[in-house]
Image 1 (spheres, helix red, strand yellow):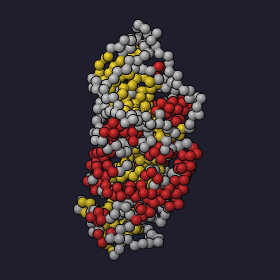
Image 2 (cartoon, rainbow, N blue to C red; image 1 turned 90 degrees about the horizontal axis):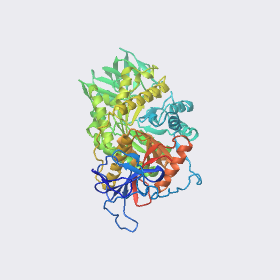
Image 3 (cartoon, one colour; image 1 turned 180 degrees about the vertical axis):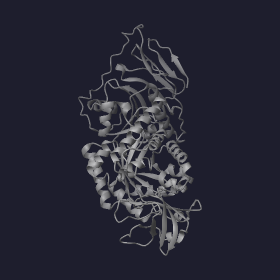
Image 4 (spheres, one colour; image 1 turned 60 degrees about the horizontal axis):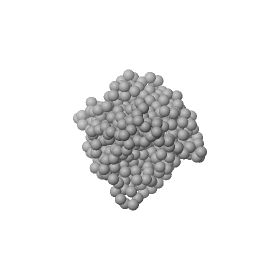
Length: 619
């Protein structure tokens, strides 16, 4: 888009963007540094606009003027260069004093009753202590278990940076899950945290049972174990129950059994009625209700798995529980097709208020990969469950498949969690392996929205240390990416062909580019549904994104997306009013100071201007 200098009668210089845009110079006292109007359509490309707005029809139904217009500022002595976004003083000039307009008097915020604002206390402390660039962009999910379910343990994880608490419905009783949810909610309301809750369904794939209440059992090399389909009240030593009635019938002598994605391996050596005798060939820890697959002549035997429903009868009971408890996310295991997600979302929307529960598809089977794009398109997000996925595809394909899933999710504007075995050694040891640190760094470099701890936080000996490793490695890798501009050439495909969605998308892309070029401290987005906040997150700008919404459910869901710092704030239809209140509240709490530079984006307005961007200095 070409930029041409327009002569004016004053000493100011104004720049006009050829097309449907008009440049406007700085207002009094440097409040609005510059603005560019977009009338009747979306900007196709903006090199560095300083304010963009999309104007709709007027109240009387008459279309807005589509002709490019240039406004000459009344205040002399200021020039805005739209290409690089720099404000300059111009020396003297005829009439510079006489033509200067009196400053516009803004209503004092102090005189009005300033509403409250909710923000995560950990983020607030980080901003006060270390500034904007110190905030972590990659979100952290912790699986809650015996090692982390007590109120003081949950608070330690929240203090360490946990954004989402995950409940694995494979383990624990209904009473236990209810108490954990109560503890997390109390933590949020009483201590000022903003931890979202994710419920992860068990799925109907073949898995083992419990071990008489033990959290884990060690299988040693060469030991003989019995896998049975009998329902036993008490298990003999080295015996486990399999939930699939046809298991003993389907397996053959010589088959290889993989437990929990290959963490432990057995070879079938004998079949005795409903029992299958196996020999341990790769020792390790057996966890209750671990997933079980079997291979024959180097191929996965999956015919029986394909016949099982994605959502079991137990899963539906758990889903009803999650809806009743108002969890923020439900993750569905072993999703094979998009129809399962559509059916579940329809079920939730009929029962949950405002459809406020996000549905995540767990990508952990070869069937999921065949229908990947269709599944992600209808989901609210995805989880790369690498453990089970690695048991169904060759190991050497897991890294490239992970990268592909992350890319598809970002292209389709869906948050993605990289999970399973990130810091597996920290279940038993206080320090991770260097290979595990490299694995975490790679997931951050791929720009996944979130990283997840499983056994490390649920049953490990060092849950807080494991979370600390994720946090520090994420911070360092994000800093490295910004320093080396590792993603400066990222190009994302257009999401929608609908004009209104294209306008939102282009505005958010332009706001992110502008923020990077101007080096602003933060991007502010005012949104009720969270859509524009997610578009900004998709663009992955260098600065943090402050997402202001007036709904607690939306705030909780935004807490999982890359780079977003969600606030709950009562919003009005007037953007200027929202900005004034936000500035006052952030300054009062010491989170921002006078002179900080921000880009502000909004899709909330009762006026003709429906969407807008502004560049502002904190007054």
